[in-house]
Length: 93
Image (tube, rainbow, N blue to C red; front, side):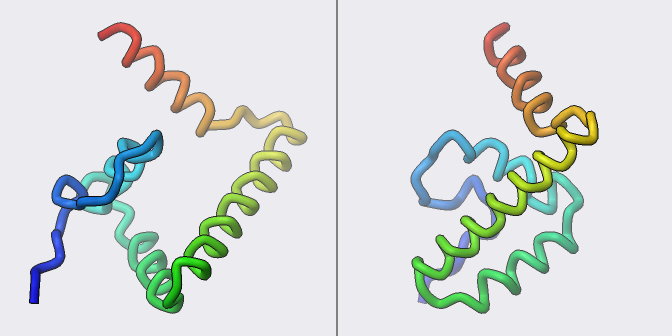
């Protein structure tokens, strides 16, 4: 039986535009241990890729709806701001 990698750097998943942000949110880097435990429960309850896709879709819908409510309330979108900051840092390298 092979050992499951403990850290994102050891994962063999395909890299994409979200990889860096996913790695940055790993609990040993972000301190988000409670959220990680919840994510493990949510994923653990699903046994097919279809159900995992449905979970991610639901989370994206929740994010979109939250962003819409915040925008209507005049609150700047922190995710867009964070990505803009990252893009500026990457461009200056």
